[in-house]
Image 1 (spheres, rainbow, N blue to C red):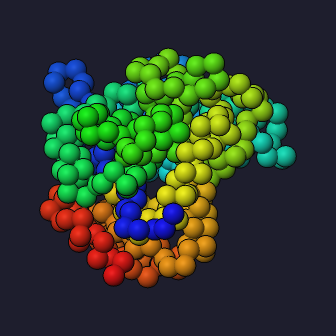
Image 2: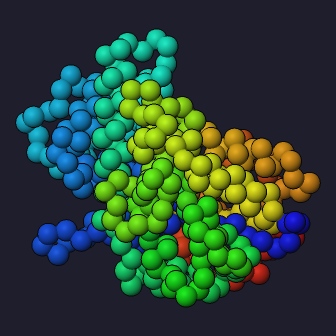
Length: 338
């Protein structure tokens, strides 16, 4: 199959945030869906199990802030804010690496596995708090109308279901790797989703599962934690936890090879996500012509500079917010390959 004029859309955390996703809290308040800068503050606030919250908070203060113990004289809100500058991918990568590194002591190995389990268990719980609203529906339905066609595909790196629940199901889309609806828009979620569950060692779509399917944001995606996982465990957080996850990543790479343009909305190419970077590098090295790249991000200038220093890309388009991008048309995006 040739590249045609397919466009592959990538949705990062900034896409849900830019679309206006939030969670309701007591008193009628609203908490915006987290990005890197607010991840830990929001994550710890919405943890369901207090023991998981304590494990994660203690781990972050000890290994990333140098505290021997969690500061007890500060209130919870202040403590959470102190952790926001900790890189999410780096924290996940540290745990997965320490759990298997030969030099790791048995005590640290066991500890890392316990913190890892707490993180995976709570990730689905936290992101299920964020649902579609009038703002997200308007944003994504406009995106669907002006830019997306059935021959395209959408890759969402987000655990939340903001994109899916914001567009009408009648528009015919499917979870690629889990559903089979010919001639429909493919939605790929390589990091899992809050509405995916394990049933008889298979992944199925299910609202509010007890344990969501999560692939951790770490470049060590093929490492397994011996102490916390086995072949049938639903919480190991890696690509090889289920056949469907590996198929989704393979399909994403296939779509990247076929598409004329790759549009990254709210995805900042974090340095720690080396695995996706390796996929992109592999795609670029095997295509006859490089795809056009479009960045929709407030930091688009800095991201473009970083990308050009790392990858052999030539044509890059920039939009600095969702609203500006949505004012454009599909033909404007395709100009980046001409």
